[in-house]
Length: 138
Image (cartoon, rainbow, N blue to C red; front, side):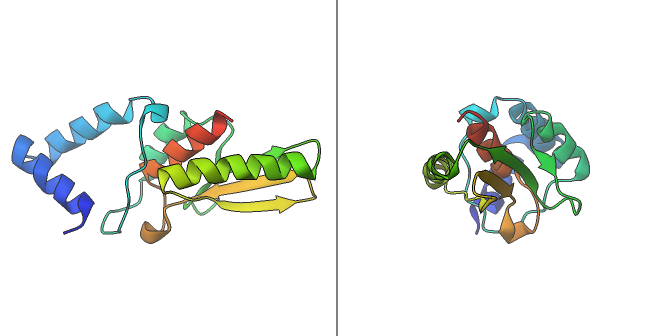
């Protein structure tokens, strides 16, 4: 049984209904993303709905939803290539700590574009927004 299925089963036993689980989830969504940790995702859960995405996007300034609603992205511009690479290494450290990794592209020598999505579910999850919030702190 995957960790998400176990979590849902546990919460259902405690609270009894999916509505109660949703209430708990909504309450916890409002906790500061910086205080949260990414949770391993093995699939079996649905990607965020457009409404959930819009709610979470408010928490990660300067990140944008891609046209297919499957990822969020942000571009950072630095003075030079070396600063861009230093930034990428800082992102890598956060990603390793969280166990959730962005797609990274360096272009025009000083621009870094990051894309976040939860590949196994083919869309966005809370992990993407947790990592985006932590990257915004750099």
